[in-house]
Length: 106
Image (cartoon, rainbow, N blue to C red; front, side):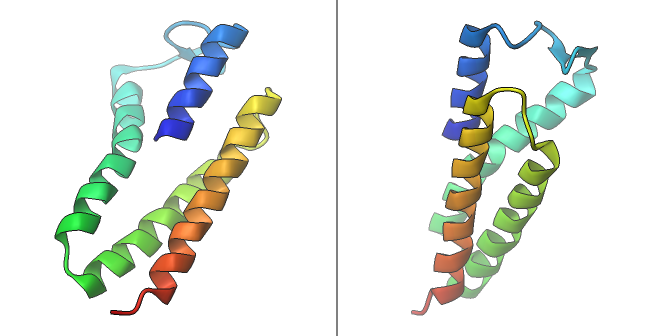
C-alpha cells in the first residue's frame, strides 16, 4: 500500500497525471471504489495475519500475493521509471510474502 501511495505522490509531483483521470480517461465512481478496495488489501491482510489461524492465513497470504503480482504485471510498463521501479519493488515484496508463507511452519 505504501508503495502504491508513494507512486501516486511521485506521479503528482512529476506532473504525470490529470485530476479525475487514469491514462487520460475520466473514471466513474465505481472505478474509484475499485481503486480504494485495492488500496485496502494490504491493511486487511495485516489484520487477517494477526487474527486468522495458521493454516488459513498461510493460504490467504499466498493467494492474495499471487493476485497482486498478476494485477501489477498487467500494468507494466508504466511511463515513468519511478513507477516501473516501485512496481518492481512491489513484485519483490509480494514474492517474499509467498516464499515466507510457503515455508511457514509452526
